[in-house]
Length: 196
Image 1 (cartoon, helix red, strand yellow):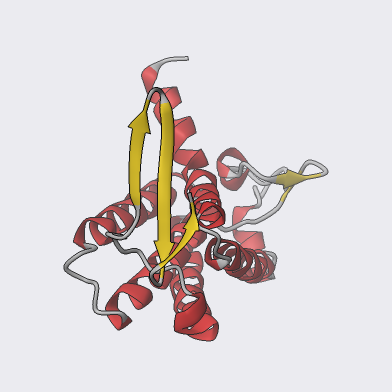
Image 2: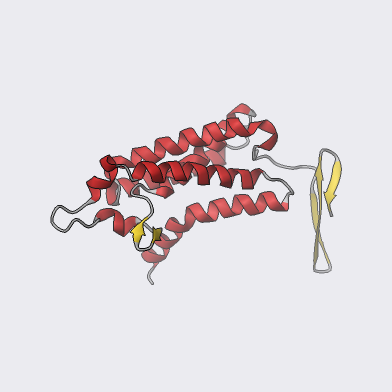
């Protein structure tokens, strides 16, 4: 496996890696926000999958001679019984959902300056994914999962409300140290020690 293939594999797995990271980090902090984010992505993914099976999308990818799916079959990682799960790129949907969700949360909590790097990284990921899927897979249809993902992310953040949102911010109250090879952390939430 050369570097290009390894980079492509990591890129295609990135939506799973990011979502897994968000879920695991929220579990470690004792919150449900990461799990609720996963639920929102799954519900929104079902909408994207449903739209992708509509005739105006599905028929575009059929080869006129053989009737088989050509371009999307090469770009789709997820199949069920050897049939494509979605005829639209779910990676674009997932990245745009995360983008919409975090942009809404960051802007409404007035944390734009502190999270400028996060905004930049998510924007770059969305842009790279759109360009790749436009050129290699979905062409102009990449706009459909982009719109569904962004709007679903914002709507999901509104539905969850401020109490259940995953808010990216620094926690100055938590302290970690290493003593004799032992890693210890004191995690505080609202002034109370949660875990030590």
